Amino acid sequence: MRTGVGGCPVCPHETAGHDTIASRFCAATAAGELHRGCACPARSRETEERGRDHDQ
Image (cartoon, rainbow, N blue to C red):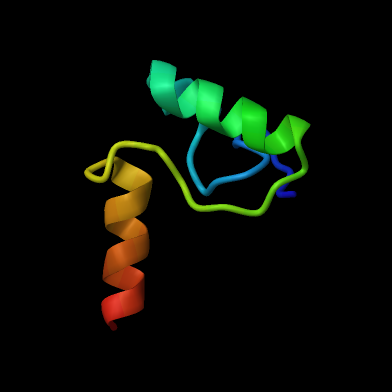
């Protein structure tokens, strides 16, 4: 699990930026101590930045 100020414990996004589905998905992932992907909107700022970093 990830830790950080304001960050989600299971994905690379800020908790405040989660929509309803992402909030529930990440909460269930954390509660079940699961290792799975992310349900956050694909065009979120963090996802876009991460994609640019990966492409370089």
